[in-house]
Image 1 (spheres, rainbow, N blue to C red):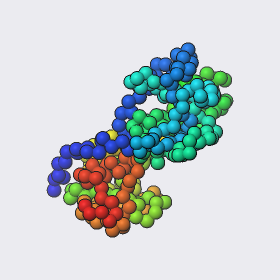
Image 2: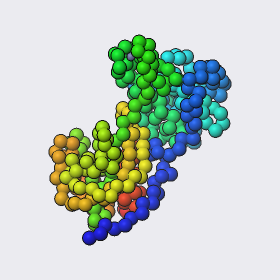
Image 3: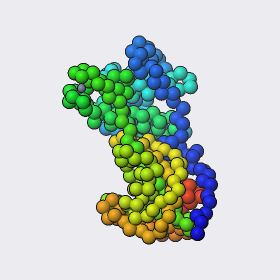
Image 4: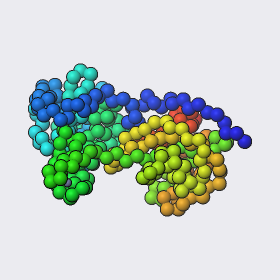
Length: 319
Ligand SMILES: [Zn+2]
């Protein structure tokens, strides 16, 4: 039987939760090595800075009920040049910096609170979420690459946070991004394959995912991961969207993929259980609470919704 032909209409692309949309920030990478420009930008009265620490930032609710990154004018922020990341400029010419510190500052007002990307990514505007994910990714990379991978010497920060240099051997080290694939696999009956990882709670099902291996194309990676984890063979693979995923340094590449087999055989190491769901199966499972909806910032929810064709139902809600 021929697989049904489906054109994926992405009705979820305008949601501010996916970290995939434009942030409106020009990263202005050409300024990173220009110390005079950076110094002038830092001291400019419109420049804004925020502290990132351990993957967290301060967020606060505004009077109109939206949530924003707590930023201060740069001249009020402590100058720790060694831990200052230049993140870019906006359409109004405002420059943004992140300051990496050992701890978040004392609360600027009572309602401000610390939040990681999984929470803040759901609440912040695209601009603020984009600034935060850039800062968190740089912080993670800086934290894990303090020593030269070529000679073992301690490295120093350069290029406003985007290079680490080795003073001993002269090597320059650049931020790493590790590609990972995440895929919604559908079968000839247009059912979706969802799996539960070994460490996930009962009822938590999502799309399969895994890291791209050395010497592998992303299409090969999609097919290998699905076969390894669920024993399903995959034919057509279609790229949908990507998402920065700095936990600590991944880039999630999202796909729709067509199964060419149906019999599930989970590996039991990464995936404990996998099932085919029709739309009706999934709706009923969400509503009964048997399956927990994959809400959150992960692109998994977006891929599942793309297949589902409309926003996913919540527990107990009428579809
Ligand atoms: Zn070195």
